[in-house]
Image (cartoon, rainbow, N blue to C red; front, top):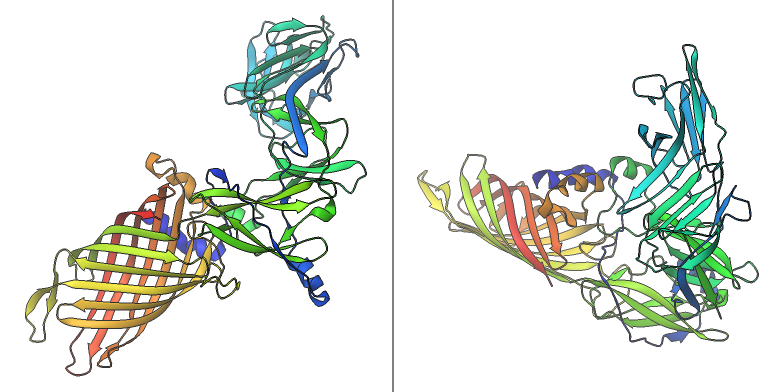
Length: 614
């Protein structure tokens, strides 16, 4: 765990902000009517700039109905030369190989097979060669005549095959027959004349060359088509339930724009909406968030009538879903929130500002009843012909945290002492209901900590005699986040104002200090390694703080170089139960003006503990 926390020092320089924690989704059924207020003309431009994040519409089973998946195929129209499966074409050009010098160059249609292993299989079904293709649609292998190249013989006939295995299923295709001529001067590769009777095997039964059937989501589907040239396409895969996040009337006439979760649809000009926009340095160093990154989405236009969605299954394959669309939300029905709007809450009831297309502002009050979960909250929008539902997923976190810790302390003199420690903290969703972005909303937190020595610390009194003393410390601090958000969810840097009451033997030293803290999810590049340990394969949150104690509330006491530097990490076994560990450096330095007594002590410590979020 030391390595975990120490990594924070490097992360400080390069990390970026704002990440989200994933949790089970629940729905808040209660919908609140927003309070409208007219926007002054002078603020319209500002609102359009600030409030430009669109709320999605919940349309599934209302404005949009998605039929069960189908597999429709046609090998008859082309007389066995070409397969049409749900609008995607498979033919002799879907997967090709070309030998150029000592290099084999492959190209393939990623809509049919995304990638995988490329192999050479002879007419007897023996695998002569196999390599993992790391390209997407193209891949080259150099060194055909080397020991790592295909072990084919002069005059041998074979297929090139590509196969992608995902889970318990796969998708793959094989070329028509090739033949090779091996000479001392080189290798020549070319197509071999061959023909066969085209056929379709669907659900392990031979079918007519043209047909189709409805299949069930989550049930494996088997398909194999053989062209008259002996090229084959096959898959065993489960169709998935498409997840549509939004639908709205498109700028293109008689079309709608649908937004959904991956996989991206086939046979559609779909654009990718990135869930996280990381900088190059962040990606190179692997400092991406590891607590529930936002998912990538796709968006594409579809006709309102006779529309269908074509997507791959869980392990590949091609499935189509007929869409029934009626009364889609219009562009003027869209609602917008601020880019700075909250992504989560600590409270069961909260609010935010919403802008409509006419630049009127609304106060949207909503409920988030489920703790440690994503709550889907709805806003009714009256459309031209129907009432639409805008929605937002709000994570509700626990505002409080409490833990018990065991700490081992080593001084620069080599002395060792054990400490028992209790810690509690609380983050405020707002201050007395105020919604001010800078001064109230998810900015402030408080924490308190008390620890006492379980074994005594060797010390020297004023006369030079040795004695063992107790060390007791009570701490309290007020924290302010420079970026609002939730603890254990959103990265931040912040400021600390701290109070510490230390008792060392007979000396009581009350101190005031200021400092900084920084917290985030464990960087991806480090988390990958720790997650290989079973009990560490959970979300992890790390933080560090530095506090400099600058004065004492006791006028008789003068502080020297008195500070604490702390590194701390948590593994969240559940959203409400965690283990923790940390280490740090603490320097005590005080002196009494009245008698010159005091202490100068540098300690190094490590701590472990268990805690709960509430």
